[in-house]
Length: 234
Image 1 (spheres, rainbow, N blue to C red):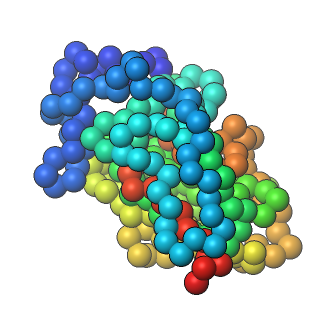
Image 2: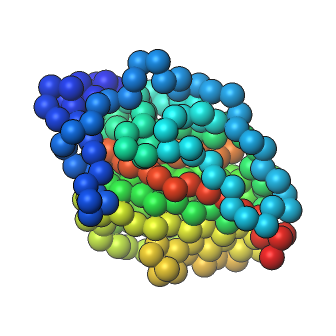
Image 3: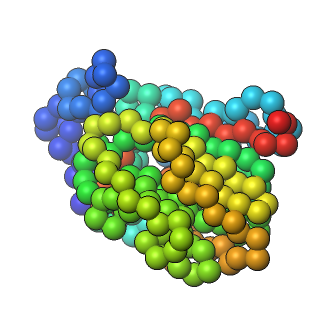
């Protein structure tokens, strides 16, 4: 099951980015067997950086390691994108470099290539805890943060609903500050929650994604242009 996605690509035609920026079945190969899944940490995060730091070189999974979810598929790189193929449950990667705990922003582009569940499961530090930004969960449209006061993204005040089309790139931005978490999709605010005095955590099945990881659920996702920058430099 975990290699079925890449097997299908080898039997047919693999993923490629079209001129329109969509991931389609066309003309590139699956990740090379020589390409390491577990790699040394990339350049450490600089707390007072004035420019964003890229977390993905567009060619390899350097700085990322496979998240050991039961029933996962095997992530890879194709056409400048991280590909998280659909697994039996979750498929994911953890970043091995340094990440700030607060006062930072993360940006990335994400696409649901196939499947009907969440294609962005971004787990991130929040002070001494972690949380997850979910896009397209619970059958395709639920967005929010898991968990706040033990309620997940489908059951707390961050819950919103949005239609995500397959083959379309969405720009995602997440901001973490000591007293709030905010998130945007294509410049539309989807999360704006005060967190002072709240319990912040992740769902039990996502614990392996801590402190910073990407995941999809029974859905093939493409991720690109991942970067982070400190708010302390502003």
